Image (tube, rainbow, N blue to C red; front, side, top):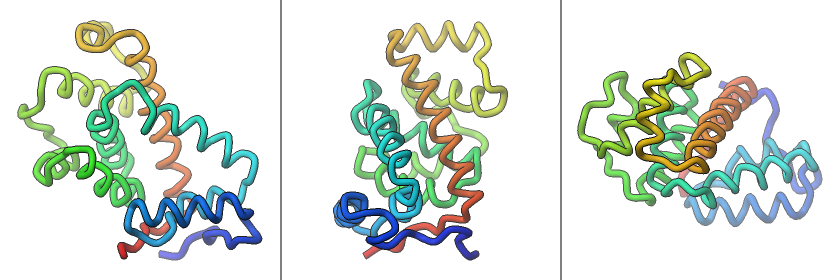
Length: 178
């Protein structure tokens, strides 16, 4: 597979995005993440997107483990190799076991999750398949999440579904591990 738009150079993405991508690569122990060097080509849009994304993960109200579960589930449902590879590493850092990560990449989630995690994953699946939540799912979700967490969950799923579409359409290639 060849990227439709290649990762940008220092000149193409600017010094701040270039430096940030290098730092991110050190943190993830990969090459500078192509998500940053590709989307960085948009300059102003990139910084707005990055600020928004950061309010959901890692600075959202959901626990980091839960956010990574949702992101991995979205990557699986949207067949996003880039998101899966990137967040598989981040998910392990957030406390997900290899077995849990494997389950997130299967049609049948199994029942080994806590009640809260299970409803979060069911809600993510329902959102990704219908772009809505039924009243029963919403009631179960509200039994475990407060209002802000519910809103952030909806935004997190929507954001990563949008990102999966962008990355897949641009044919962004997963980062190589160092």
